[in-house]
Figure 1: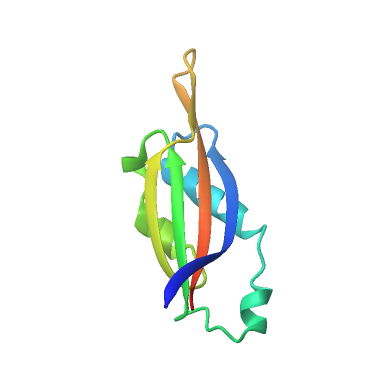
Figure 2: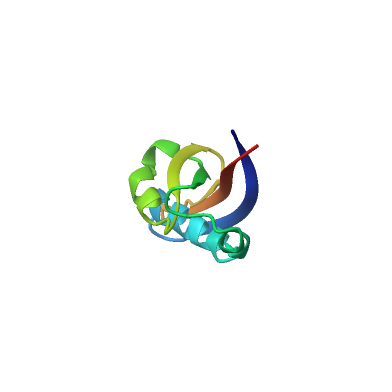
Length: 114
């Protein structure tokens, strides 16, 4: 059976003063999750721990600074994979040397379907 995407949720998150890419990524994922409900999966009797595949893509300006394991640990259900890619936005305050980090998250759920 092929894994087919059945849910796609998008979110944004930020760390306005700390320049913390992981914090911004975690907030983006939580934003996406709070727009979603797994009612369909429950109605179909799908075990979200073993039959649901969750693919998270985080977009930030410095992807290597995202702790993908921390992001993975924040997901409550499914078999989770996380990747960080170039995206998002850094907004530098040159007067204070402060970096506001804005992250984008795409959370896709796939099921094995015929």
